[in-house]
Image (cartoon, rainbow over all chains, first blue to last red; front, side, top):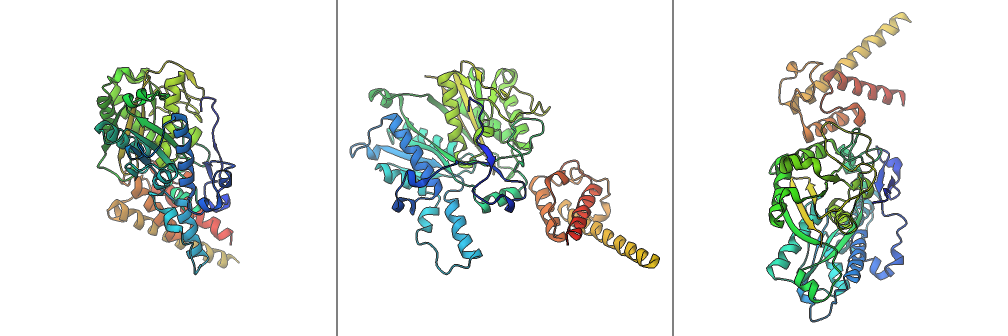
Length: 378
Length: 99
């Protein structure tokens, strides 16, 4: 992300001639399930679960968290996803409706159920604590992080494997998004003049979250402190965003983290690249931060990794951790120039070396479900 | 020859006015008002057709006329009724030309 490379390109998962707007997406390209799973496992794992299991494995191995009989019940798995096993669902329905198949694959249900990625992580790593999926569309991963934070704070668990996964690039899903007239035909240009909408993405981001004491006691490598979470609902429109709802979630995250607005250096914005989101989010930031809004570095990394719906907050948390740990804010790619409705510093096109002590990551979902996480440098 | 041409013109005029009439009816349904109160200069914003309602209305128009209206032809904020009808007629003409 800091190198300014974008994963957005012509979609290959479906025939682009079947799409109305040219079909661009941020796909996980050249991915071969057989390189990671044996045939028996692949028949049980939707692409979404595969991404989730692989990312969880990487996180667990980086964290060095031992998982044995003694602590397995003290670890949770909380995963955010918007669509779950979309590829399996699309494939089943194609066989049924298009091919009038008389038989459907017997493992369709266990692949497509939205909770499958969490189950598969628990099975793969022998985690027996609270395990479930959180679904709040594009805010799913941030809501999942909030659930994990609360379980750890309450003492219910010592650690959580948490994040988000999405694999939504099917013909059915792309056509449905297209019908809503929110997909960009060119690329994602958050906060920019000439922005034309969302570019869908896919992938997974998983983390090991634990209390500071627990991490210190086992000498864990620590990346950042998840300082607070804030959630709100707009109670308004099923699609249009709200300044009030977004601002409420940002304020709640600051309060929960015990951070004054002036302490925030960087915001990884929801920044979808739609007209409505980017101007609304800008107004919400003005409302919460006042004069400090102009001193914030704000970027949306969606022009690099696409909008991976329920996994977005997780992919963006990776960007946040990089900013805090390495002192480099990832840029907003695809930026063409200023839009009067988006009048803040969006770190256009080029990464910015700067010290980041505290940062926020915004997720504002369809249906007015908002979740913001606050991170502090360790 | 001359007669045939004017017959075609008359037919075309009727067809155009039918498009206008049906477009106004569909827009009026979403604006929850009498089609008579909508003018060619009215914008969707004037008519308070917003967000998902506007997108659903475009879908209804596409279904009614059997066309696809590209995003660039459907300015859901400042586009006028005249522009909307024009965009629909353009797509209908393309459809006819295409067979």
